[in-house]
Image 1 (cartoon, chains in turn purple, cyan):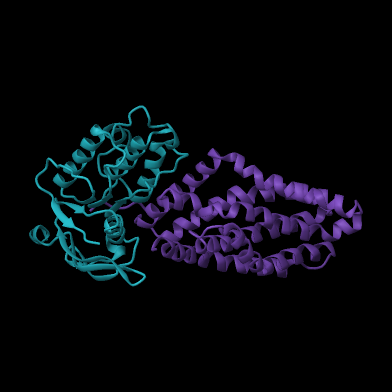
Image 2: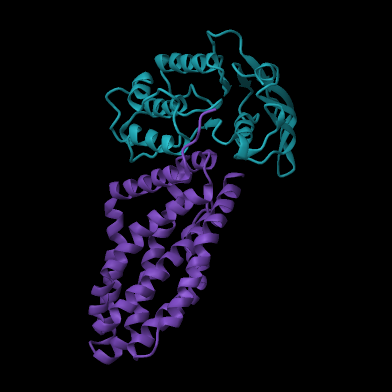
Length: 229
Length: 211
């Protein structure tokens, strides 16, 4: 009996596949980035260029903007794989489905959230966030965005196959994001006031650790059910 | 073990059934498939051919009855990778080339010994199209790219849903040739078709579906 390739080979193949696919459609990667920049730009126009006001809301605005920008790209996470039958092939592969989906989520995070984190300092500058706070902001984003990707992936898997899932997805995901937003924005606010900010960051990290383990399993179960209909 | 494997069927179904909203999709089925055999699943539109194949592949849950794999109750973990399914959706990424699509499949399943991607793609008639994005291929060429996956991956049982659709006469001959080679090497295949199909390699077993 032929030996199947190891889990590491399979994961590498999966990650490479999704990154190649994203690169072939790199125009799509730019969309959330442009969206986030434009939304951030609107705030000084709407509220006036008053330093103290912008500084106070900067952390929250950036977090919410990043969250909404990620939401734009979220419902595409499994849809093309369901349409062209690739998901069936993944389910039938002699590899743990949860791990393969974990790789898909990782690729999705790299292609949607990472560009947003890269431009976060620019968004912070637009809102006059003090430079000293930016490392905390980036740390909060680095922990909060994968959490959102993982939570989002579970919901995308649950709504897979339903029509008009985009709006439903937003309605389901946004309430679930509240804790992540509170902790991430809390850390930034604490850093701005010179208070210790490690506790909310630790909470974020703990939730992320939990989600990394559980979300791919939930995704796999949900997608199996979606196919079994 | 070798003596047993010649007599124990690769796949055996006893009173296999499937229900959708309490309505039976097809009448309870009994059949067995030995290594080296080909089974033709026949039936009209809507008689449940695709449902049967999806269930055997493990995409649908088993409705009722028993399924035995090499004489023992079929468990997905044990036969993972040994059963390949090719449905109406071919499972190819349109933005990737046939070669890249094959590379992914090989990364997940491994490959048959002594087979290279280039030679497999040439065998299915895609020489010169290896690096063309699948979206630019014709429907028949896409089908051929999906068939290349069957050839390359190490699997025992092929479940092919309408493999002849979209193929020209040479393509149909190719499918028959691949099926012959696969069964001659000890593999087995189940093929659905509502047209009449002629195989060169002896009379296939026929499974008749009634809606």
